Every structure is written in C-alpha cells, then in structure tokens.
Length: 335
Image 1 (cartoon, rainbow, N blue to C red):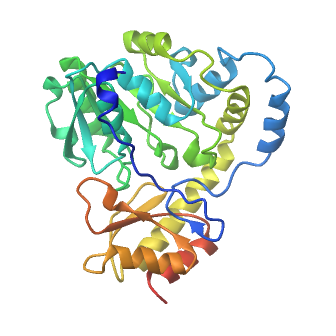
Image 2: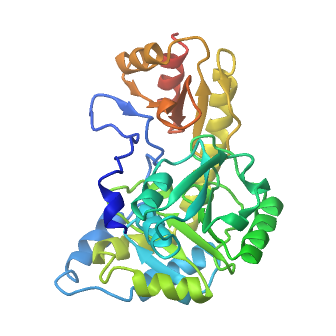
C-alpha cells in the first residue's frame, strides 16, 4: 500500500441494512444457509485456542469447488481481502489499471490505495480493449450491478492478450457460483478472487480465497497475511464448499425467481438481463428517491444504484425467497 495515497482515498458506499423491521434487498447475499453450519462453527471453537495457518482442508475444498490445484489456492478473509492482495502484488504507484464501469466500487478504491490510477471503461466494452498500457485489468463476472456474465470465449481471448502484454488479469468471481460457467481459477496470468459471502449467506464469517499460478501465485503466497483466516471461518468455509446439493438448489431457485421478477418489473421499468442473484432496474423518469422512500415505507430496503459510476436513475434489487420477492414486487409496483 502506498502511504502517500491513503489520505486521498474515500470509503465506498455499499448495500446492506441493519434495520430489523425491513427485508433487505440492498445486499446480494443468500437468505438461506446450508444446514449444519452452527454445529461446525461450535466445534471449531475448541480448536481456536491455537494459531491457525496452512488451512489444508479449506484449500482442498476450495480447489474442488472451482476445479484447480489446491496449491494454487490462497485463503483470505473474504473476497475483498483477496482483491486487496491481488492489487498489492500487481500495482505500483503510477500504474494504470483497467476497471469496468459501472461495477464494484472497491476496485478503484483499492487501486488508489496502492498509488495506482483506475481507468474506467464501460463494462461491456472492457474485453475489447488493448491491455498493453496497463499493469492490470479487472473483470467482474457476472458484473455487479448489471448482472451480465462475460462471454467465455471473449474472456479467454482477453486473458491471452493480457498474458502477451504481461498485464495481470484480476477476475472477480464473487457471483459466478450462481451460474454454471467455468471459473478461470488456475489459468496462467489470472488472479481469481472468490467469496463465500454471496452463495452461502455468511458476510460476517469473512471467508474467501484467491487463486493464481506461477509467479503470481508465489507473490500472493508471500504477501498474504499470516493467520489470515480464522479457525471457525476455515471450518465453516470448508463445510460450505462441499455442499453441492445446496448450491444446485440455490441456483435453480434464483434462476426461476429472477425470471419471474424481471417479467413482472418489466411492465413498468427497464430491467437489465441478469445471470446474478440481483436485478438492475432503471426507474426512468420516476425519481429514484421516491422509489427508495416508497419501498422503505412498505418494509423493503433496496440499493440506490446511483452510487455506481455511469448510473443516474437506477436501483438494484436482490433475488430472495418467493414470498419475500412478492413483497418487493408489491412495493416497487405500488400495488
């Protein structure tokens, strides 16, 4: 991290509500968690009197989950920690980094903390850019907040271009496990960041991982914080990553409900197609503040997407359980 850059970097707004009186559609976390987590967490407390390091079980489970070698997995305290580690070993002061817009605001923040310059590019045009003049490039797939999955062929072609240019490709796959798309984990020249927060509904556990091979992998392993994952997080994460039936059921529910919600909302609003557990809604000429206030009064919290670059009349809504989604539709459609 570049000390001279820290004072010039602001915090980034995020979704998430701690109001117990509303249903939170502003954060894209699964409202359902795998059964048995509480017992796994409780059992891990007995092992928490010793320092934890290595995390062989977690690395093995993560490797099986994304189909890569366990030696290439670097455990982290959530996906954002994986991103900070990725930028920390690839970005020096003055470096330029390609970032998608609109997309996750933490990319630009983390790059600036390293003294780098984020160069914003339309998310659906980034894969067409020449990466030669950049130290790194960032791809979010499916992209947050638009929801679209990167075309696999175009993504691999862009990775080839990055390798030729000696440009690191940082791939944020926080929502990829809601799809059946193949991860880039284990591909040379790519650093993949994964999170357990979204699929398994455990943002407070702080478990995730990075995957990289060769020199990039060596640098990540050297730079990673010692004891960077807690014993309970490692145990719960390992358990969750083995819950293949839970993942499949979640994918089916999200796909079905997302299609139903988009069809209903499209009667009134412009709704972007999505492969993720959320929908980006353009409310058009209706004031976004009025939409946010109306839904809040109806007991529903949604994300003000105007905090994302290039968006000025949008909200983002998560896909939750059917009965909750019905309440969201009633509130958004004012029925």
